[in-house]
Length: 106
Image (cartoon, rainbow, N blue to C red; front, side, top):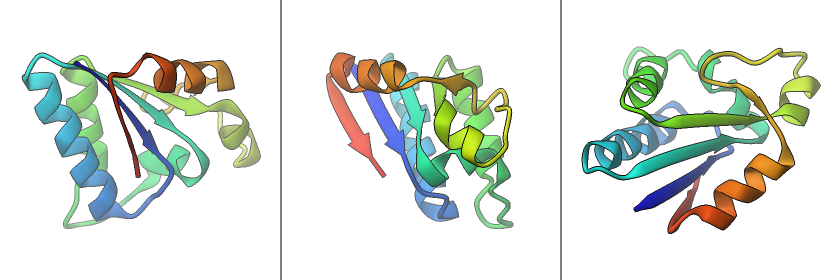
């Protein structure tokens, strides 16, 4: 299955659990593309002692998941992106939505 996930929040528990699902899906043989939009582009800045979002995101990357981040949203935050938040476009967002068998938004 091709699972697309759109993350627009920075709530540590919500993002952590979404990434847990992504990692589980990858381990089941699914492909995962995660598009970060709005506040979601700040995913690599989430610091919470209970929910290791950055560690979970790195596990998703290491397992073959793909992250894409809204370039406009990054630019508004004066961010050049990162490994977890690579600068992407509206076209990439569209393709995540178009090409996914299932789409989750949080």
